[in-house]
Length: 320
Figure 1: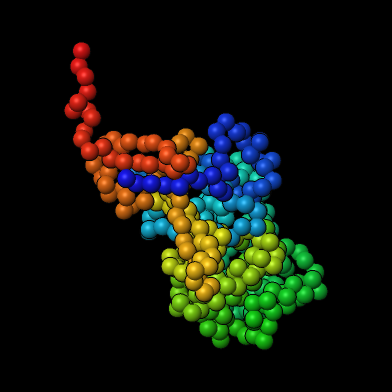
Figure 2 (figure 1 turned 90 degrees about the horizontal axis):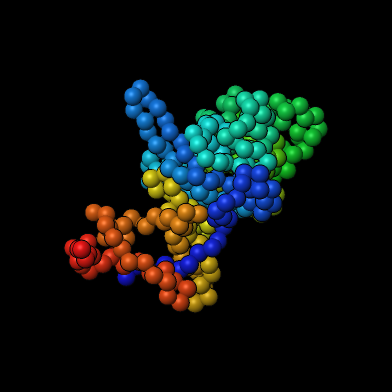
C-alpha cells in the first residue's frame, strides 16, 4: 500500500474562487491557478506548464526543484514578467500577469521583482565597480545619489562585501560575484526576489554561504524569495521545497528539527492535491502504475491510502 499524510498546507487553493477574491487574499503574495504555458515552434507545440497550481505566502522562502525540462525555469520567467502565460491565472501582489499592459509589465520588472541569474555575466556590468553595479538600478529608477549610496552600503555590508565596493567584477571570486548579484536584485527594494540556479557554478561550501545569505536577507527584510535550483542541500535553508514534474507541482518537502539528533533535521514529503482532487505520484511510486490502470483509494485515520488492485477488476465485471 502507498500511504500519504493528508496535507492542507500552503497551497491556499479552493474551488469556486474568483480572480477578484484571490487578488484580495492578504496571506499570499503569489497565486498560480491552472497555469499553462505553450510554446509554438513552426507546426510543433510544446506544453511547458500543464495546469500548475502554486501559492506562496508573503515573506516566504521556497525552492523549486525538478528535472531539466520540467517547467521550473518557465515558471520563474513568468513570475519575473519575462514571459507571458498562455492560460490560467498568475497573481503577484495586486497584478494579474496574464492581463497586464506592456508598460505596466516594464514597471513591474523595474520596481517589484529582482532577478539573480546563474551566469554572473548576466547579473553584472563588467566595467562598473561593485558599488556602481548595485546603484545602477536605483539610478534608472530616479533615486537621489545620497539614498542610492546609503542603501548600497547597507546591502553590501549585510552580504560581507563592504570592503570590495571599488573592485570590478573580474576581481571577485564566483561566490563574491553572486553576492553582488543578489545586492543588485534587491537594489530597488522589490517585495519579490527570484533566483535561477544562483549556486549552479559554485562549490558546495560557497553554495551553502549563498543560501545562508539569501535566508538572512529574507528574514531581515521580509522579501519573498523563489529560487530554482538543483542543489541537494537547499532544504535546510528554505521554508519548503516544491517539486515540479511535467509542468505541474507534484509534491512539497518540509524540514523539521529532529530532537533525537544534535541540531539535525528530518525531511517529510507530501503529495499535493489540486482543487480538482488530482495528485501526481512521486516517480518511484508512479512506476507501480507505469502501464496506467486502476487503483483503490480510501481514507483511514486521517491518511489517504492508494493501492494497486491485485487483480484486474475489469475482468470480473458483471455482464447482463
